[in-house]
Amino acid sequence: MKKFHIGVFDSASLNDFGTVTWRHPDNQSYRFTDISYWIELAQRFEDAKLDFLFLADTWGYSEVSGVRKDISFTEGLDLPRLDPAIVTAAVTPQTTDLGLVITASTLLELPYSLARRFSTLDQISGGRVGWNVVTAGFANTASAVFGREMPPHDRRYDMADDFMELTYKLMEGGWDPDAIPADKSGVYADPAKVHRIDHDGPYYRSHGFANAPSTPQGTPYLFQAGTSGRGQLFGATHAECIFLQGTTPEKVSGYVSSIRQKAAEAGRDPRSVKTVVGVSVVVAPTREQAQEKYQSYVDLQTPELAIASYSMFTGIDLSGHDPDTLMDELHTEVGQTQVDRFRGRTIGDVTMEFQRRGVRGFSAIGTPEDVADELCSMAQAANVDGFLLEPWIQPGSTADFAEKVLPLLRKRGAFREEYEEHTLRERMAGADSPRLRPDHPGARYRHY
Image (cartoon, rainbow, N blue to C red; front, side, top):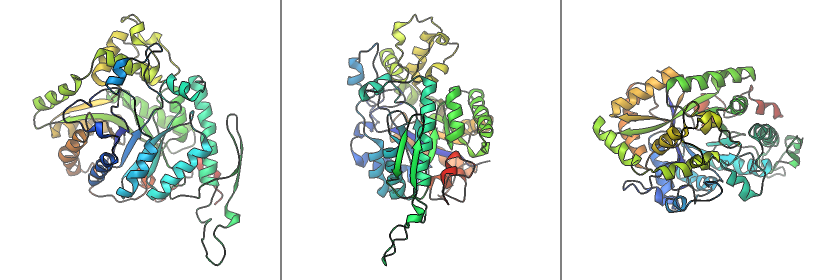
């Protein structure tokens, strides 16, 4: 059996996944503004030898028909939150091997400043950083607070292609890996190995020298999660790991096949594009106890919360439509994935489903053996490379998984005993180099 890649999906905020669990007596997420909380979590994940901590992020927040409901504040649905890059920087010296993945938007960032931020994080972590590339901020409120127009869905991906090209030029082509001999006899940087960047794209321009030197990975390891047709094309072109959501192996398998076909059409080895699927694990000594634990999380959700949360991810007010309306009749320029996910179902169905699980993927609920069986079954049936754990509560959900399920996966040869590679790219790609593969589009901008 192949070894799984397993990371933890979280965010520097009170709640995540469109669900609210901060009031659960066992949940410690209310401590998210305390850096000791993140250090404790990261060290737990590293002790378990997990691949990475994935910090999702959004600049947007929920509004329903242009009004932010009081319940969004009282339950801390999506505000406040911290900058994941700064949290990552604080956690970095307290860990040695854990990968650290953060989300950044190509719509609301600029390539030059983003390249320096990621290069800095990759440098100080020794090559453990990943970038989850998103093309928006999840909600129209994100573009409003920045005073930016929200471009149509497909144009955002056109803009992101240009953004990525300039970022590659800065990270891969700005400084050669050996550009800094730091020879105290008189040469700190070799001018022949530092290259001027000149970029005049359809959306972005930059002329001058990259602000940060080459780092262990050059470009951070690249994640992406879009499942729309245009999103899949972008991911197949740029991403090294695709984060998928799906409740059945058939649905997930369809995404995997489509992405790998598009990767091959883009001139890449399709097996070089890894896939991980989101999973919410609830584990207990018996199935009955696991169901009771799961129900204790679901009982905290309400229809009002579900409507507010869905609005944040899509900009759509479900309460403004007849419950019998089919989702096929709706369209949004923000979060189309969360509309496509429910094709063929009614708005009433979606409200109930979103109340039960938010944006979570599939659930594995039961004894440790049940959960291990379900993960192995999903990996085989859907042909995925691993899983992104979506905890209901922290640290309880992840601790339960690490203590009760991981030992079984290790016995089956499905997960590592120890870290073998240091950089995130070498670990995830199984490569002998921390740099982008030669068939990746970013590699063409190297000068070495």
